[in-house]
Amino acid sequence: MKIFVQRGLNFLLLSLGLTLMATLSLALIIWMLLGTEVPAIERIACTYNLTTSCVIAKAEAEAERSRDAAADRVRRAQAEAARIRAEAEARVQAKEAELAKLERRKAELQALHERLARIERRASDYAVFHKNKTGRYEVVTGHGYDSLLHDNRLVEAWCYMVLGRGNDLRTIYLARYSKIRGLKEESIPETVLREPGIDREVIAAHRARCIWPEGLS
Image (cartoon, rainbow, N blue to C red; front, side, top):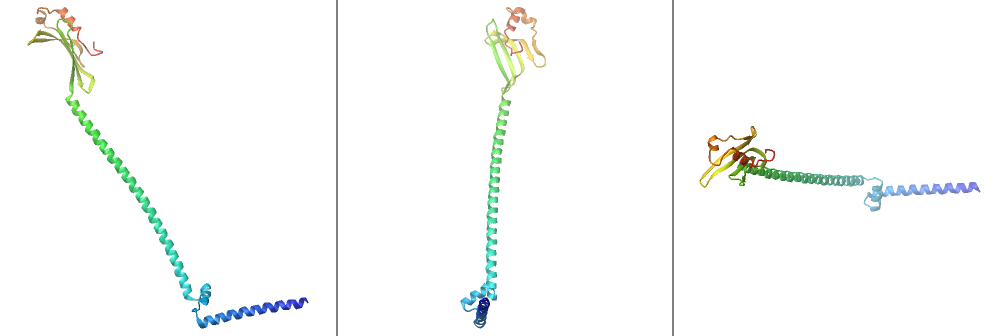
């Protein structure tokens, strides 16, 4: 029984093989006779790359896909380059605007410096006068500064008393200050001391009424 079954299976397999070979042989004969004009045969031929036209078509399609991919990469690279260039240009413009602002500020400061220099030149040798009228004669003390802008830079000071009235006014210097000599009393001529109402005590009393800057008296 087993031998009979085995032989039946072998026969069946042989029959199937012969049928497949016959089918393939028939398809090959039809393809040789009709070429690839039949769509079904053409598809089969193209599937197994049996025709030159199908091989060329597939190669061209692959080449087209490669060209499209390359073109897409080029477009992305160009877009990225354009973005980077735009950002760089924006940074350059921002720096140029900042530099222009600094240049304007520099020009403004230069103009202000020149204006202050002109003011300082006009205000040089600035003097302040203090008058004391509590005694018999008016006593005037002058403080001379380097500039109106620098009224803490004392250059010199002087003190004198005023004699006479109206157009007949005279000054008698009582003391002077300079950076070199310091504060020194002025000598009074004898001719002045012999005038009515003027003596050394009067000179001393009026000299004490001089208003010196702080630190000099």
